[in-house]
Image (cartoon, rainbow, N blue to C red; front, side, top):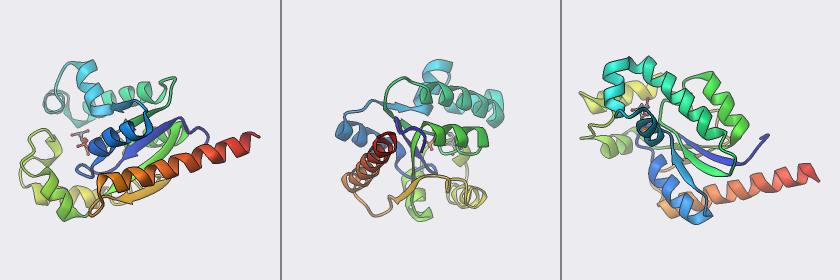
Length: 180
Ligand code: S3P
């Protein structure tokens, strides 16, 4: 890892990125920035509206622009990304160059129970179970570039936060040792 100033959470929708980011922010006393929330603030439209008006490609263009801005913030921070932010190689390279990349994962059943009845995720409208299974297959190895993967299906948020905090401290230690 060339730079460990950011903790970047990646993972499929419903794997717990936003909740974990909030708890991690408390635990490590680092600011928490959420790429999707930042997109809505900067663009002025909701994510479903962007998908309807600009299509998925339009959304991905805005997502990359905002991701770049957040990854270049001049201070350490926790960055929670949207589930599809990993799809562009440009984004993956940028994340790896900007900090510690943690993948949160969960079983399809857990994801389906967490995201069902959700109107805010354009890619999961219709038959949610079918959409989750299909997208998970399409993205089967899309998150594998992460430095570490944590399955959130059966773990408490505090256990997950502890694991990430340990990985973060190791990353800082490694970096310090390389700089000495
Ligand atoms: C998406 C995930 C969403 C949001 C958008 C597209 C995806 O974020 O960015 O609806 O392609 O997986 P969450 O992972 O926070 O739900």
